[in-house]
Length: 211
Image (cartoon, rainbow, N blue to C red; front, side, top):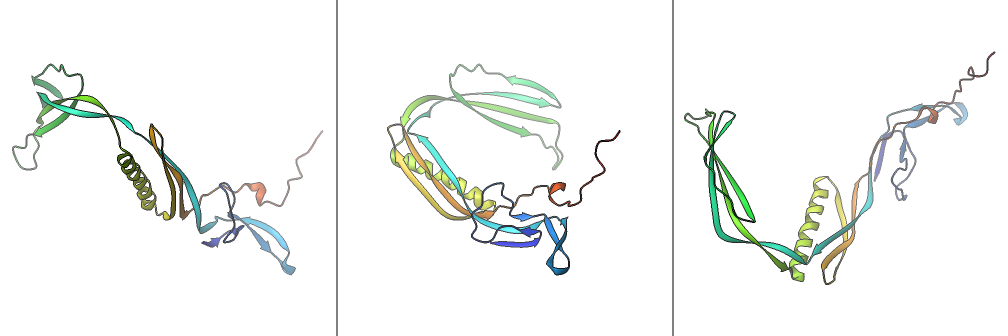
């Protein structure tokens, strides 16, 4: 699909193009009598150009992974924030090797919509141990499908039309490999400055050797 409003189209529907090709030139011919080109003029080229393109896609999901198993042990500490100062109400000693931190802040609001410069922050430390696990092929496939769907949704959010998804899925002893092409229809409009030498036909002959 191609609609040119200003400029000179250099390609037509069905042509194969590559990145960097000029599709609509910002140089137009000024035609005089007898259909003779008398000069060239630069314009701001303006066109709607939709092309069928494709993206190479590859995703590798390792079958071996590390999972968290929480022990149920946790510790907490508390801090008071007054203006720009912090006051530790209770500082705990963390002896856990691995842990997640969950932070919660309570802001004092003595009057609705009036925030006093005083808040209390609690930190909860949940211990976990790392456990080596292995995904089944179905689990790895589900992760791969989720990753692919995120890519497709991102394209759709950018007004890209998904034409076809040609994906192969293979497995080896270590990984699930998802690769192929995502064939789309999208705008390929990009702009490039027209050089003066591309449209000026007059030559300054005043430059030369002088004694």
